Amino acid sequence: MFWILRLTFSLFYVHGLSEILLKLEFSKAFQVTLLYHGLYFALGAAFFKRDWHWAPIFLIGAFIELHFRAQQFSQYSPATPMVVWVSSIAFILFSININNLIHNKTPWLAIIARRLGMLTYPLYLIHNEIGVFVEKKGSSFGLDDRTAFAVSFVGVILLGSAIAFAYEQKMQIVFKKALGALLKRVQDVRNARARAA
Image 1 (cartoon, helix red, strand yellow):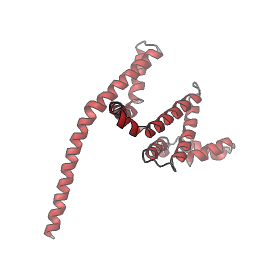
Image 2: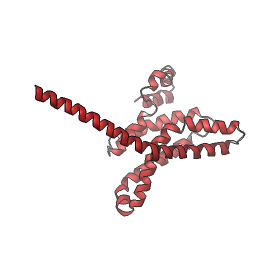
Image 3: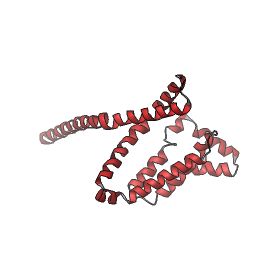
Image 4: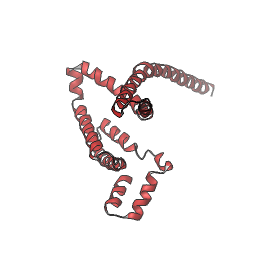
């Protein structure tokens, strides 16, 4: 709703309200509400649940948010991130529709897709902070922009892979065991109290 109002006030030159929403958009307090990322998570959840009633609303809101984000980076064409994003969404929808076929006909491809999927969350967490840091350090060591970006890109992929395939899976096992033991202990205490009562 926020993004629809933001676009409406912007298109119809309602400057007073548009300025209020702009200030709200960049306030730290409002960013805690996941204003920027919440739509993408909601859209992913709608796709996962095959909720085709809510998905178009989240899709439109996310597209509007991306439109405003793209305007912040004037050195690049705003069309570029939108084309990349729409292409990615189309690929996701296509993959949802052929998911069963892939699992049944080419299980090896399903394993590769699962591995790539496991890599996405560590990349999401580290790509900006670590990637930009490595890129800036590369530039400070005299690398040209493209080479610094390539080093950063490869470095983040390698680090994300190490997290996803070495550490994260081991940590899941550790935390699942610990949580299972804790839940069993809580259940044992409840059972003991129930017997005592």
